[in-house]
Image (cartoon, rainbow, N blue to C red):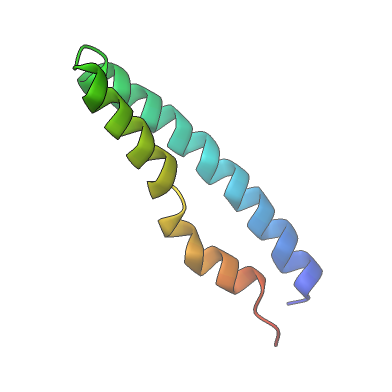
Length: 67
């Protein structure tokens, strides 16, 4: 598969993933953390802001795979 096609598919998957992740993170915040103390809310936002990157590593590797 040409690199251009892989990158286009990867970009579409990335946008789809981010939309789903944002909705789930917001729902989880409202369901569990919204009434928690301020320090716990800050911890949640820091964790949610970093965790989204971890599952994307295989996608980025596939997108940049030069065969």
